[in-house]
Length: 403
Image (cartoon, rainbow, N blue to C red; front, side):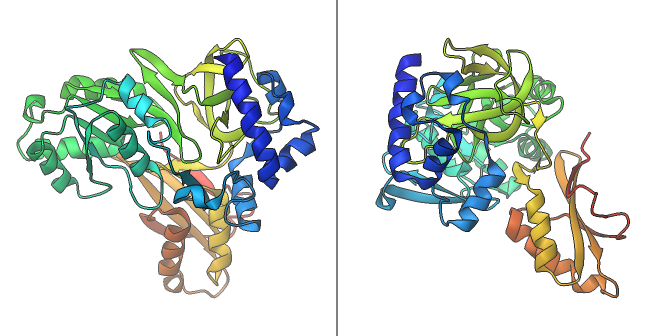
C-alpha cells in the first residue's frame, strides 16, 4: 500500500504542479519536484502550509487561492467555512470524502435510521456525513442544527437508531427526552451515536454517556479542508488514518516529523486530485501511535489541543484575524477579544470590546455582534466593554477559559 500511495501522490502532485500555481510555488520554494516524493522523509522537505495562510491566499487570489487542480466545471458544490475558506467538492465524490468508511467501520448500514444534526448550511459537515451515511445504505434524517424538542420527537417517531451530533448537543437531546418522560434507553431505540470531539476528559465523558444511556459512542477526526482524516475501529482508542490521507505529526515550529509518542501538530497530505492539499497544518495536536514503513502515521491518539491562538467553540474555530477584522470594520472599536467559557454543557462566547474615547457602548454592541456572527458564523452570547489597558496590544485575541 505504501508504494501505491506515494505513486498516486507523485501523479496527483505532478498534475497539480502543472495546473495549480500555489502548488507550484510550494515545490519551487523548497527546491523539490513532485517526482521526488518517494516517502514521508521526502515529503517533509516541503514546509507546513498553515490554514491562516490559505485564508490569506484566497483573499489575494479568489476564490481558491491557486490550489484548484481541476476544471471549474468539475465542481459540484462550493463550501464556505469560517475564515472564510472556499472548499470545492467534485462530481463523482460519493462517500462524503471518506465518511462512508468511518460509518462502515462503526457498523452503520442498511436498516439504520440516522438523525444528522450537523449543519447543512454552507459548511461541509452536514452534507458530507449525509453522503457517507447513504453510501452505507443507512436512511438519513437531515435535521441540521437546532430545535431540540422537535428532534427529540423525531427520535421517537421515526425509529432513530443512530444520532450524529456534537457531544453537548447530544446531551441536550438526551435531557429533552428525559424531561418528556422517556428516561429509559429502551424507550428511545437509539443504539449508537457519532459524537463530535471535545478537549479535556472527553473519553471519560463518552464512557459515562454510554453507561447512562445504554448505547455505543464513536467518533472521527475530520476537517472541512479534507473531510475524513481518521476514524475509530473496534475498541482501540484514537484514530486509524484513512488510506487517502498521508499524516505526519510535526514540531509546530520547525515542521519536522516527530517520533512516535511525542505530541505535535497533525500535518495532512491528501490523495485527492482536484484539491491536492499537501503538508497542510491542521492546527490540531495529537500523538503518533504507529507508523507505516514509509514513515507516515498509521494511527494517532485522540486530540490533545490546538496549536497557536485559534480556539474551537461549538464545533467552529475562532481565529484571531476575525477579531482584528471586527475592530477594523466597526467605527469606535479599538480592539476586540473573544473569550470562550463553559456554561453547563454549552460553549459560551463572550465578545469583549475596548472602545475609543468618547464612544457610546450602545452604538457598537449590536453592530459588533452582527459582524462577529458574519465573520465566524457564531453568535456571541455576551458583549462586555473592557478598558483599553485591560485589553491592550499584548492581550490574546482569543481566550479559551474552559476547564
